[in-house]
Amino acid sequence: MSMTSSRRPRRGAALVVALVTISVLASVTAIASSRARRGAAVVDNRRSQATARAMAESGVVAARARIESSLRDAGMDTTQVDRVFDALTSGTGPVVQDTVGDGVFSTAVVDVSARLDVNSAGADGLQQLLAVVAPPQEARRVAEAIEAHVRGDGSGGPSIGDPARQQRRMRDSVAATLLGREPTSRAMQPFTSLDELLTVPGMQAAWLDAIAADLTVDGDGRVNRRGASRRVLAAATGALVDRPSRLLLISRGWRRDHVLTREIQAVFDVNGTELRLVRWREQDR
Image (spheres, rainbow, N blue to C red):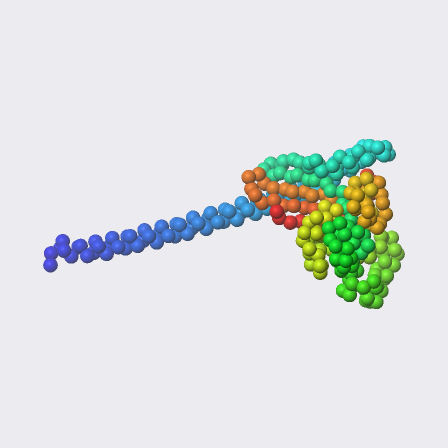
């Protein structure tokens, strides 16, 4: 056998090894590149999430500071105070909006005391509002079911139904009084969102959609007569006031050129020129 013919198989084998090596290296490079891209995307997404949340929180802080500053400037002038609240709750646009680096926030204000509070309106008030969109008997049945849920009474009857719950409530109320605090709400199982009303037997989505703008789960039982609609005033069972007693700040934050948005809903009691935090909710949009 000649030397030339013996080299050909070796060259062929070397070529195969080289091609396999190149293929493996190409695959490894592709996998590494893909992982690097995914890792970069994860890092970028986390950065966007952190920026969005920071911006949303900044929006709450900025809006609160602006509202308190406006109320202090108005002082004891009732006309000016009314103008401050009217401007805040007009719904014509955000109260504050700004950018910080590549982050953006926008905050709107809602007067929840201009709405009927689900957790304190009682069956009569809820029935009055539901009757606008539902047959009278159905409105009464759903209103009683909502009130039963709020009381923590599954039977839906007029009584509390659970002596142990009533004793705990009385105990907590006495303890709060001794500590100089406000007694806790009578609501035993308050609704935390309007969407939860769809779990109430008999409630229809179309009815809820029709009256959602007149309902809230963030009220304190008082209704702002200057800002409430006629049907809210007709259904109001609590005290009527002339100014907002609670404000809901809805702040959204995001990073420029990114779709992820963080929303913070902060509920504040209005106490003179100060806003005192009552509730805080967060969600991605």
